[in-house]
Length: 238
Image (cartoon, rainbow, N blue to C red; front, side):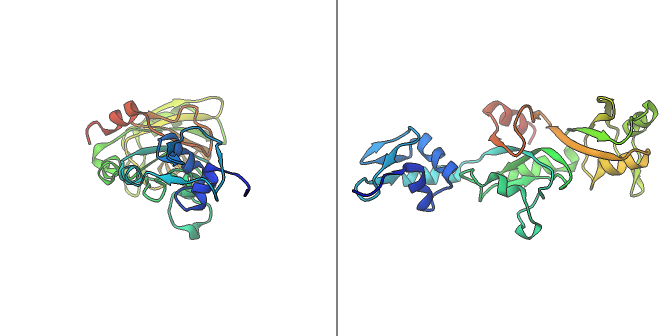
């Protein structure tokens, strides 16, 4: 008798999904062993004696479903699919069963971290990036020196970037050397450039909210799909 192997490894070896993606297929009841649907993890099978089947119709449905995923992006990863850029955010989503279909919504600079959304719903992605909708994005910013009330007031009123003022923002102090800022626009490296205009140097920048969706306690480098309630709120007005 040949050596038994974990079911997830067999599915991954067939190229159907990554090891984590194979666990998702099992959890969804799309895998049968010797004609019996298997939903428990860790089952070992004999690849020479046991018949492992995957529900192809279910796979088709799975590949066509629309979803939205949130990622807690670490510093050092580029928001791109271009692998010539080194470490990219798609590497962190490799275990998602629809990773090949997901695209980042907007971007976070390599030096920034926090909430980043992905979706395979083009209509939703376009709506979320539409500058005319003025969706709120909230950030926690660390700076090299404690900001004065005057500096924060200037950030809130708006500063000139590229010859035109930024939109009014909600700004509040955060800790000893930081502030929270909520923007309704998204210009290139906007917060860093705004801070520089008022004499502040950004030491760290983390996005914690996009519209109704909050980062919460999601671990750095981890992802999860939005709940039904979160996705419904996000889609309102699209």
